[in-house]
Length: 179
Image (cartoon, rainbow, N blue to C red; front, side):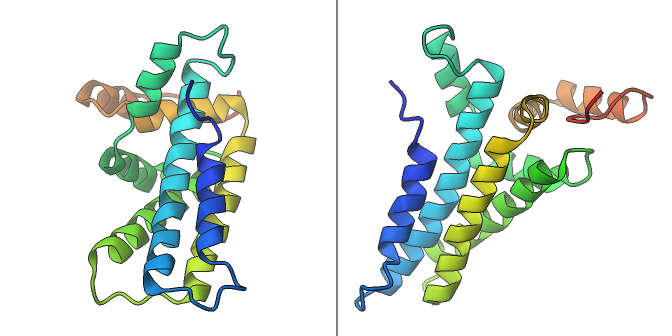
């Protein structure tokens, strides 16, 4: 069975790394906390996408399809889709999540690959807190908006781009907009 609490557990792990009572917090702890915060938002997006497109009820959904959607996300295409989400008529909680996703992915790359990077405890805690809030807001978004966002993030083919451009010029409702 998939671990559907992975995002929340990753946030908890990041918080443990930043334990304020631990005077021995290292740069490695700070870096891992920021990186873990990013992976928490990534897994939250994967879970929301799988739930939205395949279903939440383990007994009713095709579990292999659920895993395919969950694993169908790639970091690069998610970042690109999230970067473009602000230009779409998504609700504020989706746009906010998208913005944080992009920023956290950049922060993760910095802490994971830049040997000169020296994050502070305050910076790491801020990223972990922002990740936690963003995950909650994504999960609280309307089902219709989550379905539209999951579709937006997952489907990156040229045909999907053509369809999206066609929708921009139609008079109908935009992605994620209430009808």
